[in-house]
Length: 426
Image 1 (cartoon, rainbow, N blue to C red):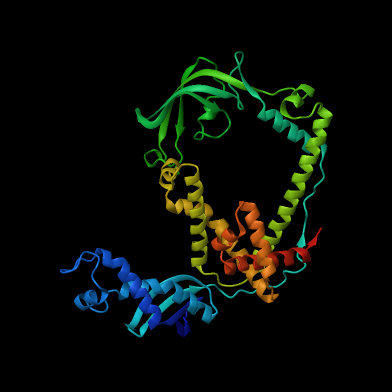
Image 2 (cartoon, rainbow, N blue to C red):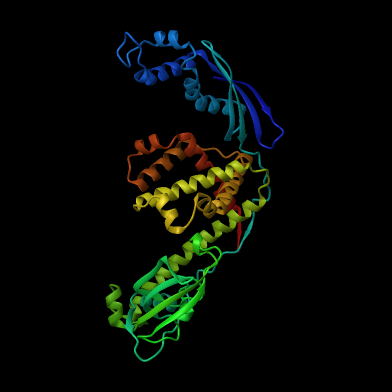
């Protein structure tokens, strides 16, 4: 396979490649296609799937397997051509076969490539590091959270419902006097002030007492997920069965023994100090990384193709779908449950996708400017870390992750380390 021409088009980051696939490679692809397709071909005089290739080509023409064979060749041919042209393809807009025969075939590809970016001022960036001081206020906040997690709900008999209470209610909703689907529940535990229900619903429960039956009126938001309810006025009939309030446990030695392996309040506070200190250090380090990343995204300059953002967004959506499947839910069910479509799902990830693309390009540009290299020792070290993290044999990790791909990731990490080590952290 060889690159015959590489022509830059008028559109930014767009090229036209003319690529020759040699006869030997094309012949192997044709034979592969024949072996796959012959199973479906029935020719008189031969058992189904047993007709020789020359017989099929004689009956249907020598080019009968060409199209599928070209499809087999395109990925590797484009990869090799891009490498020869020293560009990274991020999207293929069109493929067109020019000529084909026993000597091979030539095709033309319109592609979008990774842009050439510029970046300056990445050394010595000034960063404000967050405080890692463990204050009494932080410790008290931790204690309050532990008490909150160990709280219990107790019935309230002597007052009306307030924000922060849990109201146990029956409700049924009506639009224009007609009950609508999904608008009814019994014995529902509603945390007042949580904002889980449509605006105005929870607020109108406040002030009512146990045993009351009453109606409330609300308006569904214009962006409500159910199309038939958007912007509609609704009446809900309510039965308030019970009011519960949160009761926090006393913070004493007995409580400490229940929630930890410590014996006294003082011992527990010392343990909390260590835990909070470690967390603050980790958060401060992450914040430094975040500030550096934000600075690099500001500094990098260039015309980034929309295709790169789309590719990254699609990758993130696929990752999300895999996480859903691991939890026993498919994407279609999730979208129906949330009242979303594919575009809405993509919208969830678009902003983060743009950040990832810009940061990656910034770091790749720095790696190139600084002539950062990745050694065999670097790769072996990275493979070992991954094998340990995934509890896998190193050879299996190597088989799953190509050295070329890993090398790019290590190079980018080295570029980030370079920027971080040169940063002025205050």
